[in-house]
Length: 298
Figure 1 (cartoon, rainbow, N blue to C red):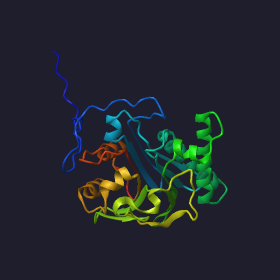
Figure 2: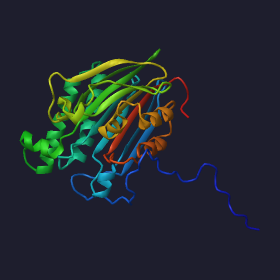
Figure 3: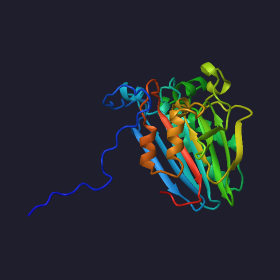
Figure 4: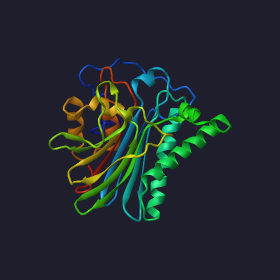
């Protein structure tokens, strides 16, 4: 006698997370094959003896509707000898015609430059930023099939960038990072749902110098932050697609992520959360999170 199979527990389809008034509902369209393409969403997650990492990047509703690719990128690797996690998050400028390529190449270049520096027992953020800028110049040359001038590099592959590293220690982790542009970073105390910005925040009307800075430009001095990530805290690095709806962290978006980042969620669940629907917030969203390891990931 044939018995119908019971649905496995926990396999019910996830409903999209809605915050306040949802955005319009529609079936996403595939991106046009121009200026670089990438998947609608990606996520990653792993743990070392001292740190746990989760990251996710999702295409925003505006890009889904207008058949544009996701222009955010994220990259992270482990430096085996030191136990440091090296990471980068980038947001290709919407004015750049190959922003998708710019963001991805800037992340990879910054991460591997910092990784190579650790092999040499040093950390040089300006050199890593210049290496990323040089990579964008070479990428623009490949796209144009000729040597570009600085303006042409910006028009093709300009991007924001936040990059750095976290070294595990006896009481948390030592974190150092730099940024170019308006992507951001925070420390989160989930128990109190408190977000502490690590760089200058956007002013009303977005009239701050960081909002117009972008690779391939490398500001002098480079905007930097260094400090300790205590046990129980979470380091967050994200693009403004996450930072704008987060605001000061006191609203519904802040409460949602504080609740779900108390301990490391699954990478897929982080991507699901990040893809929340909220009216007027339709940009690509990318978030990288790091926890000092004090308990096994759930």
